[in-house]
Image (tube, rainbow, N blue to C red):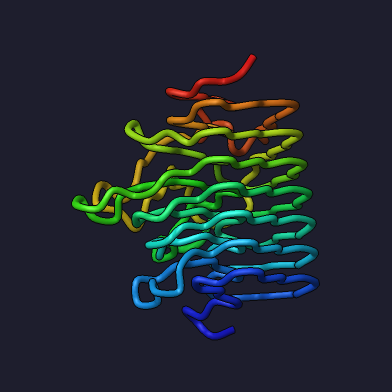
Length: 245
């Protein structure tokens, strides 16, 4: 594998299908992006990613960080992710928005890597954080995660901002097992790239949802193996989140 090389990077693309692929990458495997240099081509929308096997030193499937235009109507289903520093990573850092995304039927196995790589072995990491103080990052709405089986060293972390919480989030039939499987220490949370602090060090929560509203939760479970217990605060944590009853 060649360092710092992604697998497939659709930039400002529409009506894309990526199916039945095996990708091993020394960076991200599949990245949807909307770069500033190509902003004249508009949004990234109507995307299907299915039936792939993915291994990555960084993120297996990613949206961002280059996100000057919107992302919408995206289906990601039936894939197996293994030996990844991050499984699924949505990193809004510019003014673009993410809406109407379905993620389903996934097996995800993660492990920590060297600190030079963004991420802390999160099976799922979804954030909107300002890259620059003068340009607010976009909003995330209409996101569904269903039928996920995750094993690794990091948290399922989903976080909006105080000023723009994630809206219409569904977590359904999710299993997370936290187990130590690398030589690297547990690092907490990694926010890079961002205008503020890059890390939040310390204990993690198994599933951590922060700054969200209209959240639907069904049948989620976290198992913490003995060797991980000293690194875990709560199995499941909702902070500043409105959960439907």
